[in-house]
Length: 154
Image (cartoon, rainbow, N blue to C red):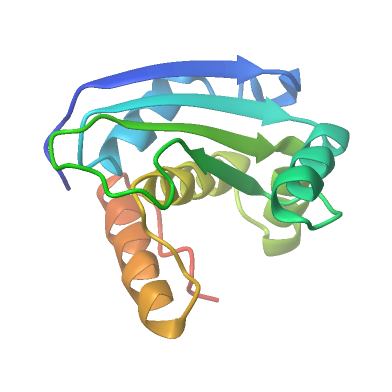
């Protein structure tokens, strides 16, 4: 697991259903586990309507998705000592539905989505098989370090 880097974290619960189940202290620990550089993140929990609107407006996909990452330096060259800045949006409706379908504890799925979003903020992606394998490997390793099972095992 990476060494702890400085993290400025703001957590917003626009949709308050997970306030108790996914508290700030856990979010901080999960984000730091996936953080490879100093970072400033805003993590926002939203309902289906806001999630769908953001996905439609910024990705051209008219449905709510589980996690969206808006990296401020997306597509730009980032110096090694730069602070990673991103907004990470989790759609509570999708998160709860996926956890129920997969018979996963909500906290376990939330941890996975937060780790996934933090990796996206740092430039990791899964647009092709090679990128997906690298990102999924990192997610699995980070989550294991946090005490969670491999999210990609059936």
